[in-house]
Length: 618
Image (cartoon, rainbow, N blue to C red):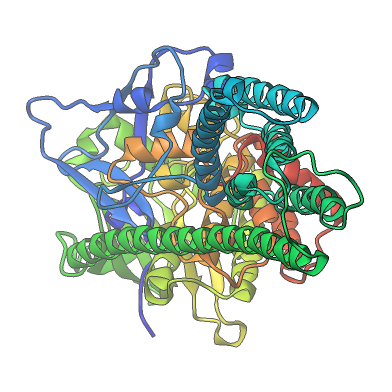
């Protein structure tokens, strides 16, 4: 069994990002999206004697710290807020930008390009057919119908071409109007030239175009129209039921031969339609395979970043420390079991009872930073506020004026969620439900005590394996950046948390409630179920932009074993608007359990669809 302590984030090589926010009204902070330009304006400020900056990351989360002074402040300006759609990207941990385009969006873009090409060619063909008409003979009535049909075809094609200057104006109903006009023009040409003339060759051209369209119902209607119209036009002529007005008349064909000719043409129509549909399906399959490959690559990149940063944290963690063998409070300190930019966690024993413990101390250089000391004392205050089974138990805290502040906590044996996910990739849905329910009980207790954790992430969720009969107990660690409902001094000026698990309102500097913690729990559920982080990037600013403006890829696209209803539940859990989210972790767990069994209530499905309509999966 592996051993680990109840280590806080700053003792494991992961310090939450703190962002200084320029003066902005509360209404602006809640309404305005964070743009790529804005996040690019988040710059690291350092004094001349504070330039040794280190960027760390634990599972799925990048954090900023200064290796000599603790957290490096980030100055954030808020320019005119506009969202640039071209910046809607999924950026991998290696810096590779992958355009976040859905399969439907790609095919629709292709349909727009094909339609513009089709109407140009169709209009050009119609003009070319009109040019020689003054020099041609034929039935005047049939010729008049043909001319009118060609003029209508040219006009309709030009109107659609003009409308499609804006790709967003693409609508299958408009395309069908143009298509049926072209079909009418083609059969008017057959009526003028003759039912058995070469004029029929233009029909497969239109059938192939419509056969590639996204709507099967529309393509089928065009095919049926062409097939039936050709039969109506050719069969009466073939059997002599009506006079042949065509310029090129049928000669010396028996009814049987005419019937065979009709069947050949109809077979060509059918073959053209089927080839077009098969081509459409092949394109969709190719794009799906490509999309899946891109997601796999992006997921592997993000996991490689996790592994690299976790390895760095492990290499820093173990060994003797400056307080090893010293007595702090009522505890004798042993080896360091966690180390980071702000502090260290020591293995310890109680000097009287010899009960194991974990003692957290600040680095000497951090003691000179009033903000860091204040944050540590906040953790002491919050940790002593409540004691529940799913929150790491605090055994003792130092006095506020102690020369060396410390927190003594219960010694945990097991591993945190970050290590577990790195080893297993993803968790079974039953384990995810157990995680959410147990962590949710800790968050509910924090909520009742008026506390918002603000830094829920895999590194701060620990599976204590001392209770082997119950597969261990999940515990919440590190209340160092938590918010007391009665304390507003550190929430107005700063954005604190880990970017990839930070709620959108938290990233914007708006007021945070318990729903910010529930959002982070939803992001953790996404990570555990899909096997990849919801948001990843090579800098905190990239992740902040994604968190505020984008949704991650659809969960069921990341893992085929996930039911579609899981998409709906997670859509509520990580909704951009706090009011759209679940009110407690028990609601999330119950909904996920029902989704896994395909028993999600209709009302919850409708609620999720409304939420995802505002911010769809990428």
